[in-house]
Image (tube, rainbow, N blue to C red; front, side, top):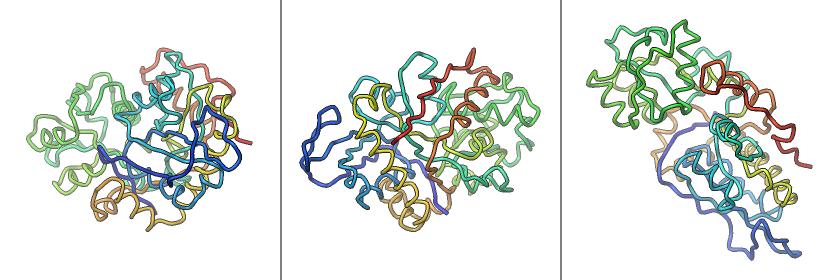
Length: 328
């Protein structure tokens, strides 16, 4: 099993020193095409890093240069403007972008949940997000959060959406929640001081909350998304059309990389610790990362529908038949 963890500020510097040209320039025979890829600085970046080391991208004539973006919307903006060729984003920011007429196309899966995730008794084994309440709060389920204060890192973003879904699934009304925007450190401190009733956290802050005796109320990520891709590699709508060989090569190489990471757990753990600068033991204590090798239209449509049902979109985004790139 593989672990997932968040770290901020780390930068991947991948790829050998090879003669290279940009993705919008035709590569002469023997030359490499350079792709700039935006990552989000999390442990799941291990898959693309291992893929580079294994030579999967070089086999496709690609040199991968990565940099960490501040957040998924920033990566989407960079891809849309041509500052970056490909970027990481979960499906929720993707759909928010599409709802604002941003022209985007999904190339491949970046991370997600395995097929048996929904049947796991302890879903925190695969979900790096967690909804925690103080041990002495009397809050026993997400439904108990009606009218309570819940910390999230940003409004209308992934943790709020997935926690709202958990509250609704438990029989509560998420519209009554007082959402508090706090970074994870501040949220954990506020939870310990009783200034908030619950906090949406990610690893390694979930481990810190558990060590402090706080109670895991829900694993909102896996409850919302279910099995399949959550994190995605996306590009502008014109990228694959303008760079068909590079786009297809990236998809083939990243799928090989994801499969390699799934099958080489210990190596992926080491790489995640190296990339995130987080102690390997902390990564091992967190949730398991899974790297899917496909993105289905059904998984994107399900998120699209849920965003409307929860009130985060006024209407479903009209999904283009070519939204998910079909690499030859």
